[in-house]
Image (cartoon, rainbow, N blue to C red; front, side, top):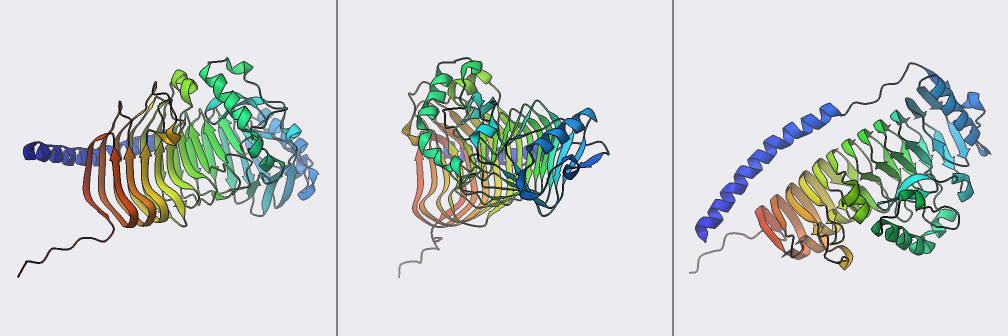
Length: 449
């Protein structure tokens, strides 16, 4: 028994060394793939298309006209000077456009749902369907950006907030459509339905830059990158406290860099997803090659994978991040036995957490849901150099599924100063702990005299 344990520890020491080497080369390879969009040296001002930054006049037509103009010109920068620009309806991007908000500029969206019709192809909690347009939307575009120091304001606390209590029937209907593989063209919501739209969604798009701006008061998820690739998110911030105000949701996305973000939102800060159940498994498009670094976390959960992850999530590298306020959970992997798919090759290093409910929580039994037909596989996860002040409930929970145990988990240099419950491991194998301390560190026992 001692020999087998010794060999296991030697194996994991070798694996950890290899992970460190492979991690650096993998990050470098991802960075080489990600190229920021380049725009023609052509710039226009939204004011010249009739917009008024007085918070009263509707600027929807001005933005539509400016986007069309830039499309004809093969791209350029649409500049928004200081002022409050009311937009009653969505802004639909064209390729090769940089929407630049100067300091003091605010785009404030109106709150009449009818202004966000006709419906567009979108996704709602992992199910593809047709619904109200996200407020800023791109479909099959390339070389697009939102930059500057301004604010994008969803005004989500108004009529949209009342939809949360009305959405259950539509949410269940969308999942039934998913499970029955109903053709997407027949999954139509909109009038008479209550699925809230996202503040920003780029779908099937590439070469994306989102930098500098602040997102606030979203009706639903804030920034949703769906079936898109080659993405840079840098230096943005949040002030979003409505229900389901996720900060960044990556879904079927690949080759993504998220850095220098200041989170302050009422749900997941970063959620990595890959579709729900039948949709995710049939799409078979993983979310992969993600770099997350130098961010500040505050909200419900900091780093989340799931629960919609049926297409699989892999090759995620998370380094040098800190919490700046309370979080319910610091690291949260969540799936159930209806999802299928996998979470693998996840590397988390240098994470500082303050006060949380749960520090590390991995579960294949999310909400106790699932028939058992499609259990998910969680494997090959390394978490190192994590410091947490207090965990009011749990320090580390790793809960697999009986037929698909969570395996190959390496925890190194983890320090949780206080936790009500220290460790809970269920349905796991090959979990190795090195220098893990929860609570007061034990000293050297004194000799009996």
